[in-house]
Length: 246
Ligand code: IPE
Image (cartoon, rainbow, N blue to C red; front, side, top):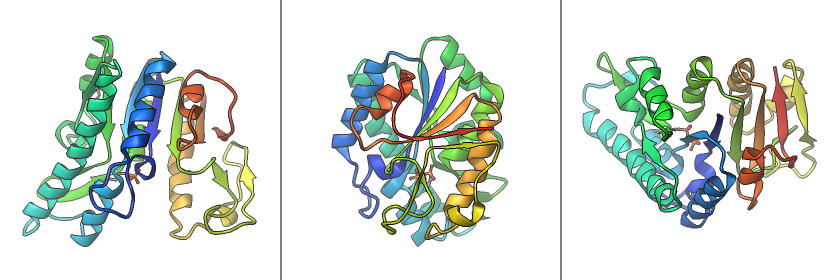
């Protein structure tokens, strides 16, 4: 069993509210069907989640009171993206079933629900979502979901499909002299270099990835915008990407 995270930046146009990247979604659904490997899919929210979550002040944990409609709106929007993706997966012959995180976290992931689908021959699909518990709301990212999944379900390796070739010493979209990092073992990376990322978020993401790597043989960060890479990564072929091992 493999686990693949499709970042929101490759399935949506990140800057335009509710704009799905249908071309990529259709191609990725086809690649996943052709790979003929068992997988759990986790996808990001992109412009279906981040824009409104930020506008409504839901990006940090908050009290629900007074924000009920805004919370419901963001939860609906990411469910809408999930539905678009499920439709393409099923059209390509993948028996995908959606597990909306807001309904199966209590407050940790109800792993039995996921296992039950796998045993019954389905591909569970989860996604970055909003979550309400004890009158508080917070965002559950796709990365957090993966952290919980790998702890309980035997996963060979995890693939992060992003919009760049892997990890770089700096943001490759901003800095021409950014250097590609082909592998990281045992947390052996220069935190200073990675923290050059515009938002500093790469370092936080790296910590999560390091945790995930403890439970699987490796974590691969690949470019999901390049046709064929997702399929090849699932099939265990050598492709360009960053390999992270604990
Ligand atoms: C974010 O999920 C969820 C919401 C904003 C509701 P992710 O953090 O997994 O999404 P991407 O991959 O960055 O778009």
